[in-house]
Amino acid sequence: MSDDEPAVNISGGVEGGAAAEFDPSTADTRAEEVVDRLGELYWEKTYGGQDAFTCLVRTILSQNTSDKASQPAHDALVDRYGSPDVDLAESLAAAERSRLAETISSAGLYNQKSEVLIRTAEWILEEFGSAAAFDAFVKDEEPAEVRDTLLSVRGVGPKTADCVLLFAGGRGGVFPVDTHVHRIYRRMGIAPAAADHEDVRAVLEREVPAAKCGFGHTATIQFGREYCTARKPACLEDPDACPMADVCDQVGVYPATGEVVDPAEATEAADSEI
Ligand code: SF4
Image (cartoon, rainbow, N blue to C red; front, side, top):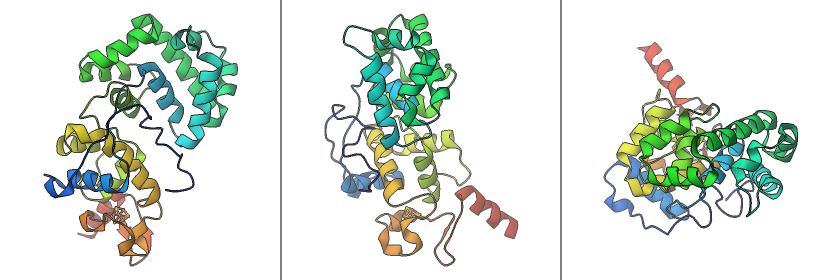
């Protein structure tokens, strides 16, 4: 585990789910085998059970930053605006924007994020009446409807919507795609090199069994931080340094020259040589 990693996997939450067993020898697809093998590297959990609005707040705070930076912002927000007697959506909708921005400053982009948080809290109150009613909607309605509804809020993108579905609703078959997931499965050759986030999500949700998608998401992020980093993947200097080397196509990674490019650029270069 790197020095940047929090002591607990806060993306998955500590009360979220039960341990699950994954066996690489029974995998039906290469994507499933990768997720099963990640299960040998990292702790295995299934997800769900978090409060949906708290989860939405946490995911907005984590946009474009690390868990390490967003966690103190989340804790400060809950300290200042959360209370057992008050609905968090109500207190955030009534928050003074500059004070909220100052509270969450450790998460970065705090002016923008404070606006999104207040707007989202107002939307929750208008549409559902309370954070508790929103929680019931996320947990009980069809995942596709929940996803579309969340995407209608300005500032909420596909990754945020999928994280709420996964961590709050505990919905199997949801594999949120962040920058690590997007990079790694294209490098491995499991998703097409030019695939966008939505294309990668479609591949993974098709090829990884529903119960393993949540674990696959968080474990791939950890793998991306520890092994398959954006600029210096572990295999660059030593092919044996990566535990996934035998299931990876290394698209855009050139150990002979030490060069690393985005997989989409690797295929462009190959096309231009034809
Ligand atoms: S072999 Fe290299 S490119 Fe493939 S997953 Fe491992 S570190 Fe990433």
